[in-house]
Length: 261
Image (cartoon, rainbow, N blue to C red; front, side):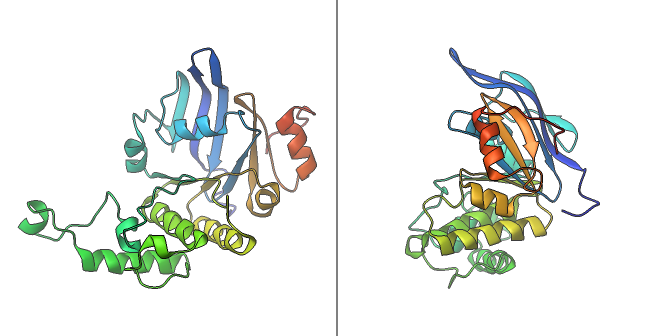
């Protein structure tokens, strides 16, 4: 994160509340994401992490509170509206079509059409352009795969994650959100995914990382957003707190002392 980017807010939330019957999943949750940073979202199961991310990405509508994108209040009615605003999310299931190839997955639901009547009336996909742009996106992120015509089901877990990240990075003009991107991956493939996250950040797109893997979080994150009981209890950095101290904040064993980073 450069000095110029350090205090530029991209995505904010103020006082978000989300109730499911008698259960309050978000209880006045705040959130701040700055340009050019990797922000790790951490907390025990049930802390509200997933609900917060669903609110920010348009998957649910908060009952109360406000979400701001580049300082302007937004009301996402569904994930498609969030995507149109430049917020892309990579969920744990990756949302890939195994039988389709890499290029088809990168443009899934956003296929490029041939120019002229064939594209507008017959909806014919511009396969050569999709292949060329896919190669460029994959190369930009230094993802090691073969042909863009290779079926996703033939890829390793890390390569599949790479395709999902490349798709998000290709269309995210403002924010990329990643939900447990290294879950079920080995050490080598996890390292590859962390490198991908750094690469996305290096291109100027801030990343929100949801993870239970504390060593990885402390390795890659600029800041840590700590949640407990449906709200933010602290914002810390790997320099300001140890992993043990972060876990203590997550579990409520200690109260946050000091100023949010």
